Amino acid sequence: MFARWSRVKQEVQAVHACWVRSTTYRLAAGGAAVVFALLAASCAQPPVAKPKPSGPPVNLSGYSPAFREGFNDGCQTASGDARRNEKRYAEDTQYAQGWTDGRSICAKR
Image (cartoon, rainbow, N blue to C red; front, top):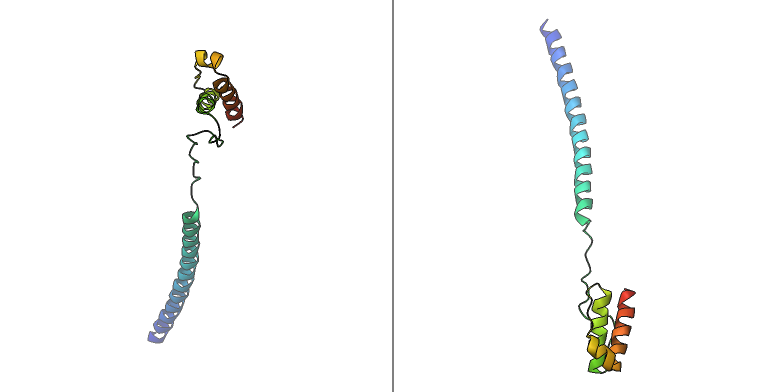
């Protein structure tokens, strides 16, 4: 009878060892998948918002101050903030041309 219990004990130990090994491998495989998913997620970055340019979209260094001021006012008008010096627009052709060009160019952006 003692031999019989000894054999049962050996079978239980063998089954237990097999179960522990298979469970360990399953946990290891699942753990590897979790680690890989975390690594892949850590590489993802949210999109970076580009800052809106504060100045005009073109180089105005060779133009007169009146043209540059008109261009800036026209550009602001195109972006929704209506801005125009009416007296100056009627009297100063450089300002008027700058305003027209600024509104036209900035409206395309």
